[in-house]
Amino acid sequence: MKAKGTNQMDKLHQQVIHRYHTLCNLLNLTDEDRLALLSPYGCASSVDMETRDLLDVCGALSRELDKRTEGVAIDKLRKRVMAAIGGWLAHEGKQGSIALIKAIACRATGYRSFNRIPRERLRNLIGLFNNKTKDATRVEELRALMELTPGNHQLAN
Image (cartoon, rainbow, N blue to C red):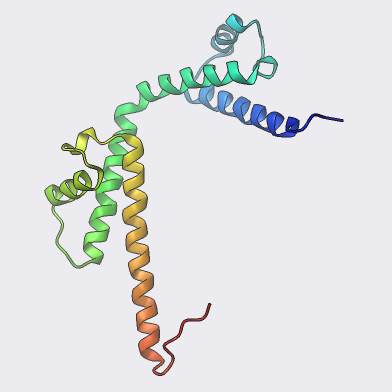
């Protein structure tokens, strides 16, 4: 009989192994590079490592990947934020300039400079403004539907 929580730990270990291999592939690490990463832990394979040690290695690989892709990835996120806010402004019937879009992003996050907004906050803004646009569209569709059916002012649950 396995101890309680063992299945969860096994699942977590498998997820971390998968993350390790994904990061290694993204960084284009060779087999020799991978072996050099694991040798300080006395392992030749990621399967043999402790989950805690593997998490540490994944953290280091993730930071390295962030360093290598920082400029490209964050520029794409900034463009996506600008598109999301611009789409929301267009849906609201307002004219949006780049300066206005950047100002909205800064005001929403509390940062003084658009270029200082961190990656995770940019992702939040993309979701926020895309959801605002979708929600407003759905409300308009419901309003139009209710106008077509006079006398039925209750929505079904």
